[in-house]
Length: 356
Length: 119
Ligand code: FES
Picture 1: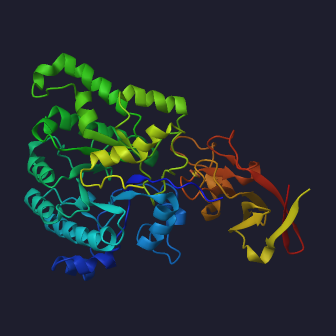
Picture 2: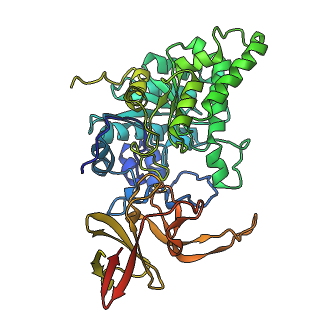
Picture 3: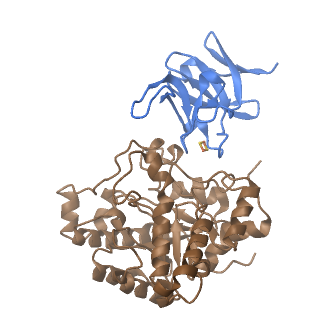
């Protein structure tokens, strides 16, 4: 029996470039550094790889051995056509990409430009279902803003994937980037790449790091809210990608309670932090904990809204969530919100629902 | 009793997994390095991944102490290609992290060159 198709808006799909394929998009001398000097991106993760095929689903590696996520036709067959995706948002983020580069500002900026051009040409313009993320090297803010100006108006670029650094995103350092984002109707995406969950160092075990990614997300949300980012940039939205979602009610309660006591310190907040979150922050579901329907519904209830969660698969990574199996059964109206409408309402550049 | 020849032993090398059909059921046959054969439903009990794309391997055991690994189960573990959950083939396909859960399994015997699955 053919399985039922799900017209999903998938908020986290990883396309992957290979060094040899990005070369033609790189300007000199950066092409020279990659091609002739064999530059490869620094690696930080000290662990053994988590599953049977590194960080990928073993069945997503191409039959000819190319890495998972590197071929559109294969992704179409295994994911988009198989599930019945309406749209998918690409989030890149494995090397080479500027998302986890530190230092060498010039290389990072050149790589961001090359990556965006490659993404547009090979993915966004090849499949109408796919939408993209603008990659930037935020350590060079002026170059980052230039890059947003250069590709941000592309009709299929829906967010900026902001690299994680030791400057928190509520810091005024990022204001020019947020201004450019607003100008182009782009949201801000945080995808864990190498978040400093242990005060800038890696924990001893992968399982610790992977368990605690949500803490890095909570820090950024609290920091942006208390620093008044959403007061200053009312059109801005923040998509928290791949941190799970069960920590969200805790954060909302904690911030509201603190706000009642300490409002005087952040008087620019005109609403409770949880209200700001409900309006500006969305959360992708993966990696979803295994919840019963009752537990899941209770969490939605605790959030006080069913409009914050957006389903994501994280294809083709090892901790992929199946749209068929990852969440408990739910009422059709709620399912429609979580599997498509919440994401559609969040990203201004995603098209309206097609008339059947 | 339902039984069926699913492949020849020569079609499955030691350490390999092969997908097959047992009646209408999509199954995996696993052949360990020691030439033991096992058969399971080709669908992970977690989120349904195709186990045929998984890996036969060993595993660290609960005899390990903090900071001191003990590795064993050589050749007895079927590891899922997605989230990597480990299923102990020798122990009815039970999940190492939660032995209350197990894969749906089938019996296997080898006669001459035939790998026969039966219930
Ligand atoms: S689907 Fe097998 S471990 Fe998740």
